[in-house]
Image (cartoon, rainbow, N blue to C red; front, side, top):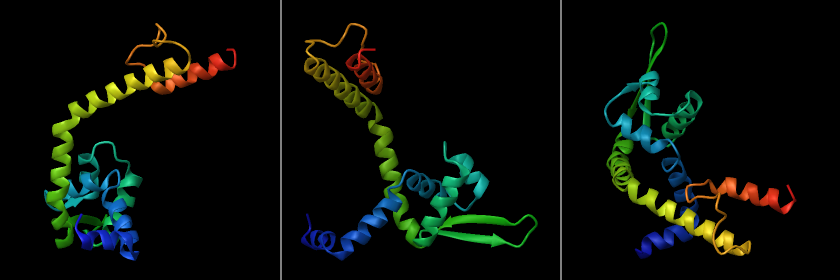
Length: 160
């Protein structure tokens, strides 16, 4: 690691860096930045283009990004008021990084799915061996939800 980066992360600036990374690494921020990279957008168009985001979460995300200087908000005095959101020059510097992260995730989703399935299978086998079973119960397949498995163990432990 670059010594300057390490020193900043260890000091007071490290706390601020964490706060900034929390904002831009939040669940919705990268998608909002990605979509605003396509050009100015109204709230409703932006909401439709970010799959799964609620109105409240989009509002919170936009306000945070605006406060951090990454998103600009222009209100037009019309009836009803029209509001456009755009990336600021600072936000534009983050757009390529957001695109790269989204592209990376899209490119590697099948590998991550396979790794998660393998991990979940290993966890099931370990849990079964800790319960005194060399293999998971016959009724538990590799695709079973681990939360479901934990619930069954609790039921079994309390005699249900």
